[in-house]
Length: 312
Image 1 (spheres, rainbow, N blue to C red):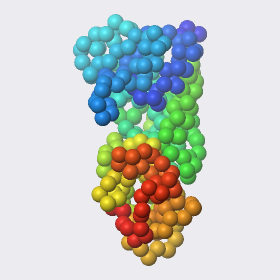
Image 2 (tube, rainbow, N blue to C red):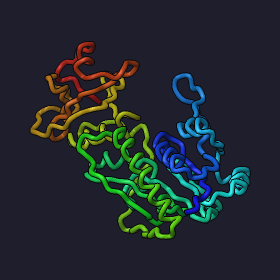
Image 3 (cartoon, rainbow, N blue to C red):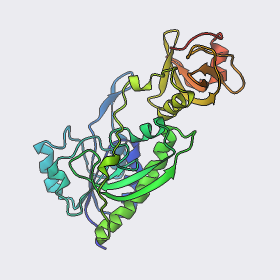
Image 4 (cartoon, one colour):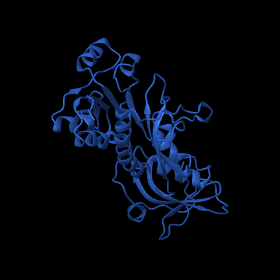
């Protein structure tokens, strides 16, 4: 089997296992395309994307176009002459000129069971919406948003305690494994293309600041799913006396309540209960603005909270 010349396109840590997998299988990687360095942190220092750091460590050519549809990059793309493009959380829409160029197509790793959760944040929304199963899809890209034909899918259970961070790492590795199977099938001409069912499409829109704010009038399970789906970052949050309180771990305790939603209860060994619409959300791990992340019992030693205080 002659291995095609592959151009890899990816940006965050999710893409690293796929890049490592392609390299370890000795496919000819002709370059890596990633997003430009961005300011980050309090000092707004320019930070390189994780994929760029790995590519440089591996001695691979790195390209960081502001927009891949610009002629300046399309000229470079033509010169690279890839026979296959592999995309993993790249962060830009690809133009028709790129999608239709490579002999073996553009393969994309998407961390959901398409056509469910098309869009920017499928991992987060799968948890936030309380899914019991999720998975990874390898698809052939077209000009739509995650609408290309499916090549392979891998399904996995989603536990009631798994966080975004845990699911991210698990599906990044699952996606890399599934990608290699798809690449082999495409090269061998045995890949089966399955069009997506347009009647089953759901979306996973980009997260905003408001997405993470807890509405204590929701059910305790919905609130815990939001906390899980945004942990460890960007993190669900509430306001404690006008200070932002991020919540990373919590447990739902359904039951009858008589308090106003958001009301703090008496702390116990299991955590700090907060009233929701149909029970309590028991806080386990939190972070107050300007402080470090800590278990709730440690937090309470330094912050006197009285029952009947209300989180907003």
